[in-house]
Amino acid sequence: MSLKAEIHIPINSDADIVTARQQGRELAQQAGFNGSDLTVISTAISEVARNIVEHARSGEIVLSVANGPGRSGLVVVARDHGPGILDISLAMQDGYSTGKGLGLGLPGTRRLMDEFEITSKPGAGTTVTMKKWRR
Amino acid sequence: MRVPILKQGGYLIASIQSALSDYELLQLRDDLSAQVGRFRSRGVIVDVTVLDVMDSFAVRTLRAIAQIGHMRGAETVIVGIQPEVAFAMVQLGLALGDVETALDLEEGLALLDLRTKRGESHVTES
Amino acid sequence: MADSKKRDKRTRIPGPSSLASPMGTAMLESTAVLLRELVSHLRENRTQLREEWARRITESQLLVAMTQEEIFKEATAVYDNYVAVLETGSVEALEAYARDLSERIIPRGVETREVLGIVLLLRDVLARSLFKKYQADFGLLNRVLDAYEPAANRIANTVGVGFVQERERIIRQQQEAIRELSTPVLQVRERLLILPIIGVIDPQRARQVTEQLLRGIRANRAKVVVIDITGVPSVDSTVANHLVQTVDASRLMGATVIVTGLSSEIAQTLVTIGVDLTKMKTIGDLQGGIEEAERLLGYRVTMMMQAPEQTAAK
Image (cartoon, rainbow over all chains, first blue to last red; front, side, top):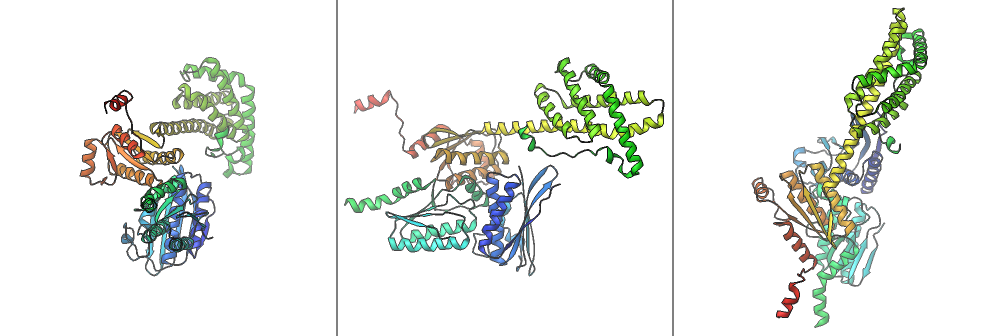
């Protein structure tokens, strides 16, 4: 069991989105991911980080390496204390958007990752936890 | 960092040099829009070869660049999308819509020539 | 070995000192003493025990793919490694040897059953010799076995697991190779690629096919790609969706995709389950697909024999 330390990236502006996805790519590479998986992971991080900037203005991304039985992967947690999401199932529908987006952010991100979990409390914030396993 | 925009004949070539923040992407959009007007450009090429991520914001902005360009009389071609990036984009559900794409700068120029030649040759030949 | 780094680090077996850790220092020391005694006993009787073991292997019809000399050579190596583990408490050297052994004997068809069989035989042969040596003192025999058995079981475990892991690694490697082989990206003309897909497409293969094609597009600077799915027995909505993704991703790289070989059954299924492929360029068969691709690229194919006649007739 070698659980590497977590990497915390504060998200306060659009420049932090770039930092988050670059660090995500780096850590994924260290965890043994390659090829299109690296791109997929950094794209997913970009989307959840942007979600923080657009809806909550600030929050953080936490990256860590996961070692499960017989497999390893990358865990991305995006956390904010923004207004939260009123209707999660609505937000997870393709084409739904409250911001300036294409409405593909969260549902698209779920398609990119192997595991995707979202919890939100209106007024208290949103946490997205997603995982990608190495193939 | 501002994306350098090169004027070559009737075309504008924007070669992205490094990862861009949302703000820098919007700046590129505004710069291209202004220069298309100033130089009366017929075509715009945005070279994204160095980008290792194209998320929804980047795609949205590139589409906006193409649409704005079109309204001002210029065709836009996006060139250099990497294999991994293309795959991640379609998995995310992102498409460029009607925006033209080409493998690289050379192909992009050839495509623009094809698209804009008819109009030009009419003027020069008649 | 270069690729040994890639393999998982396996747990070390507890050394002699930790075997009896909950029982206090006195017991701890005596376990160490017992193991030392055990080791010297196994060293002294090396020749005889090793021969006994090799004989039992042959008797039990294990390692039938190997010659007597080979069996004896490997038996010697395993025996020495075995004693070394008892002495040092570290299985690392044994692990490395087990991997190396597995690598050599798997291609010869040695089975898991046989490998487990021989290590268990060695455990028995050595246990018997301990019975013989300590039969006079039952209490001492028990203490010797207490020290010996956990270590012996770890050793059997290490060798067995090493063998199975090596087999799994080979299977994975072969799967990888089969997948690569089954999706060739072929350049038939300048800037024209053909991707014939044969067999069942699962999501993992679909992903691999797409990645390979996209890389092929860049490497060959392809402008048109013909994907032929004549050899795909069934297409469900997942596979169709992958196909659409492949077409879209290729387009993002500036290449046009033509899909050929959609059988009438598959076409009907897709319509029934509501998959919309109307945005995709589809053509009945591979030949038609290639002709269309050539047209898109500006080629015109004429037959050598007919060409002059036609011009002469005009």
